[in-house]
Image (cartoon, rainbow, N blue to C red; front, top):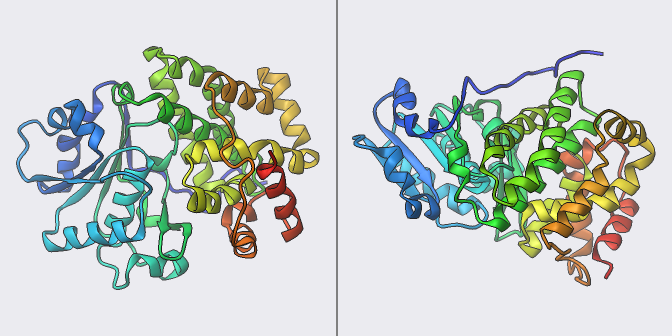
Length: 367
């Protein structure tokens, strides 16, 4: 067995320490003095945006108004970047901010609208604009991947775009940015990271390298998520690094049927992605149990980690409930097709059929 993925893609530079975000402009200046900094409302509200910008000249800001990143939103940012082309683009925010900016920077010179590339990934040209990622949540791992997950509201489609050249040039991991996260964000982001670590650990495309990274992340998140949710700032750095390591793993191994289900569910019900993934875990684990039994036993024997029990405990402690119970899918056949064509579903350790999706969905929607 090969130790490495067939193609290993890593950020060019990663800096992990408290206060590192304040060096963003200095670090990005290696690409030139003119930058665009994409951010959310909370960063400006907290005063941290002003601290990061300092007295920098030549850097302008772009506000992501909130919500899931859409193909229309990416097109709007692309137009802004084309109008006055910078030397670099940076994103400071959660997964939505990073995915928006990553896609816009990557597609700035692309001839088609973003929606075209969502269904024609193979046509994406190489990016020419350096991208810098600074996460403010510990969850998506987007700062360590070549992927942007986007929603096309017109088609009701939530799907990723990816290209090797989308990998961030610089990543700044600053735990101080996590302290302003509201509790629902801490919960959803952390659950997302844990599920991603587990799915990348059991993915059929996992290699010894990606499994080692996934295992590190699983153990770390299991020990730090609840304390961080409850307000302990001492674990923020470890949780942030675990989320980053998870991104490195699943960027190469892909995920599984949980994420295959989560994206179309998110497009239809707009529930928090991490909570969606956590709610999908029991049914997916029951479906995969026979082929992942050794992995589950190994995690329990070596680390005392029972994946299913751990997620159930978090949902209970964080008072989170299944938002899909009792709901119905109006476009049932389209939903099943989306799950089956997902790259995440393709990486599931057990093959998934249309009948399997029906059974998984029935378990999730059951009251």
